[in-house]
Image 1 (tube, rainbow, N blue to C red):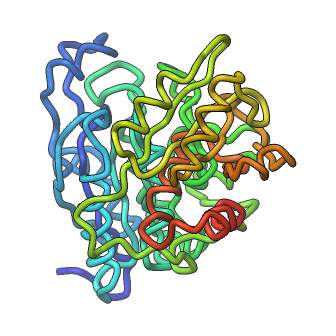
Image 2 (image 1 turned 180 degrees about the vertical axis):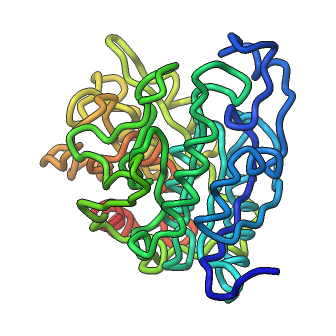
Length: 335
């Protein structure tokens, strides 16, 4: 029987490396192609120490690699989390997830979960069947963070490698290393350390979760927003393809603070004239895209310091509210 005085954490499994079953102890790459996975219950059974942290319940929402997770799955996950957190029976949520798109799912939930209660996304870089796996410790630490009263009100968090990150700032920086998730010069929020403590040193300042304007629970589909990547000598071909596809918005991953080759800039300006919201982000991994007189004259938007994949998510949810460019630009300054 559950003790009502204990923190109640619900773990939602979605698949990914953290649930992967490899060919042998040295399988660090082929497990994804094999497709066999542990259930979330089997994963929790491997960490009996979780019972000392909270009353833990669980469910398998989906079981796929994270390259297969996108807007449809985000909406399903959002609805389930909001339903659970609206009750008095759950104090926090942990989501296990593949690392390929973990940062995107986390940011979408950061913008759309309507609760102050902790939501922590975790995953693994090495499957549970491999030597040196990070799967079990990451799951245990995620439960620890979700159960901490200090996690309340900080938006959606990610936990891997003992580090607590804000969903807004975190990104995957290495293809194979366990210390892959980083936030560049902004830094992570705190630690879930080996002495059992959860420590925060800073908090997110941009709008999120309970302060967010985005309630997408009534939606079965989100606006389509595409990303085009700038490179030396790139022209208008990809922007033209997006225009012809009737996309609802476009993110351009440009150089530096948002500059583009002349042909791309001309095509972006034409797309904007035709009513397509176009946001300039940067293919650099740190720093802001900025509004210049020319950018303002062309009616283009800028993504602030959001990476292109995060800017896409913000534009997707923003377009559920407005297409007004001034309001859209304001959202990129607030979120």
